[in-house]
Image (tube, rainbow, N blue to C red; front, side, top):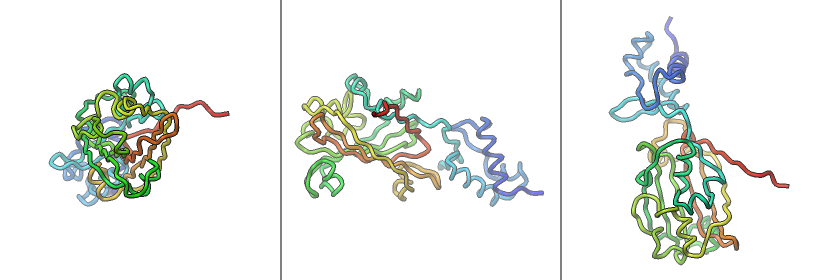
Length: 254
């Protein structure tokens, strides 16, 4: 008796979880799977689509159905912003990689800088008026050439003009990144507010982050303040949900 696509997906899922197909490897061709399990190609396609929706595999052009990493990267909470890290030259995304035991290079991050008009959200965060000029610094971060997330930061022009933060050279903005540069300008980051929510991605986000069908994204909004309460950065991030675990360690308030 022929099995259905759900049963086939269960068999393939078990093989992946047991390491028969290591991460980065590919599933057998669909016609081979069909022959092995005595099913038709339609059943195989349905089973593979189910595994894609679960984030276990993703189709890669000219390679086939690739097994995705099973161990998500730690996205540290307060620890990723520790002053001891960025003052010694370690930027936040690299702190996440090191905490997970993953390698990283400056080339893992792209960089595009331009001057734009602040929308209502940016203006409110930075204490400006909608339409005021701000610097936008947009990054796409990858691991092994696979995108993990985007992060776009906004700054008041007077805070960053003439610094590396407005240099479009790919990679982090020097040792310690943006926080180190703000500190050198007398605007040392002291307090951060982060807001996180989940939603389904837009078509552009799906393409940019190479998301499998059905995978949501985690959306981050971050506002950084000096010790006097002056906002010096507002950032928006979009993270592939299956690529990260979000970890926070903190003292419980009284």
